[in-house]
Image (cartoon, rainbow, N blue to C red; front, side, top):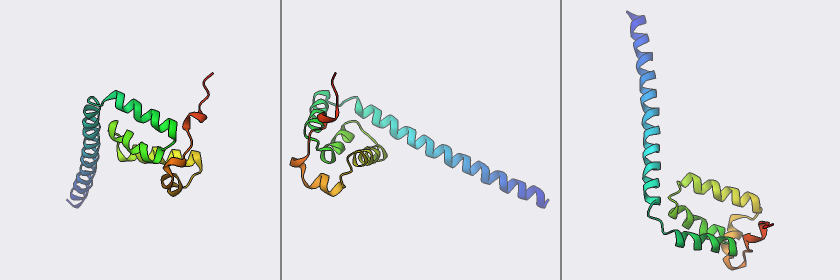
Length: 113
């Protein structure tokens, strides 16, 4: 009888873990679907102008959150982009956000040939 109770407890724990994992995955998928639906109403001209300003001025710290909102990016996606930008520029975050007018153009990083 004790073995049966032990097996039942282990089985119950496993089922609970599976359900919890599935619930987390479904919540994540629901949030992704909601963000996709909100993206459908984005003014593409405004998005284009924000991206052009970002590339032309280099104001990544100020404009990346705006792009994230327009594209309904998750906080994790925005954070990954900020980390990648900071790593690629070797500029401390405080310097990048303290002097928005002194940023250089990101167009200089591209080669159009």
